[in-house]
Amino acid sequence: MERTFIAIKPDGVQRGLVGEIIGRFEAKGFTLIGLKLLIASHELAEQHYDIHKERPFFKDLVSFITSGPLVAMVWEGDGVVASARRIIGATNPLTAEPGTIRGDFAVSIGRNIIHGSDAIETAQREIGLWFTDAELANWESTMKPWLVE
Ligand code: IDP
Ligand code: MG
Figure 1 (cartoon, rainbow, N blue to C red):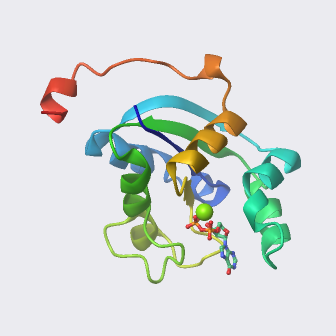
Figure 2 (cartoon, rainbow, N blue to C red; figure 1 turned 120 degrees about the horizontal axis):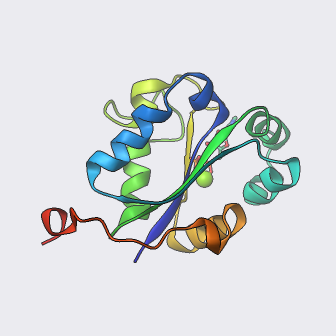
């Protein structure tokens, strides 16, 4: 079953949006497989954003993402990787559609409140980076027959 890595960044936690954001993925019908609140180490943040290490904003991005607690999650469901990206919205919150998380709650690219894996392979890498196998729960929701034909 397809899984994706989602993180509510420190701005989302500070702004009290944790419940709202988790609620959107729950209400959509995806299954929560892993969840924890932590302050990421510098090393973990650098590994997570390794693909951006040559970009001018990399240093600020790593220091921001490690500046306070974030909520790391794994969500499961058919097509969850691409669907979660649509629920999250465009990277720049000013161009993110209303109804998306970034479109509804953010105004600045450096404070866009949430991360979501951009592809299935990226999701596998990121889940492995943030979670051990023991931290992930393999379970099936009793709602499944009401969600999936
Ligand atoms: P994504 O989060 O929508 O996948 P990426 O291009 O992977 O966007 O960039 C990772 C994160 O780096 C963004 O969510 C944003 O917080 C930050 N970022 C991206 N581009 C810029 C920029 O031009 N200035 C400042 N921060 C940026
Ligand atoms: Mg990205």
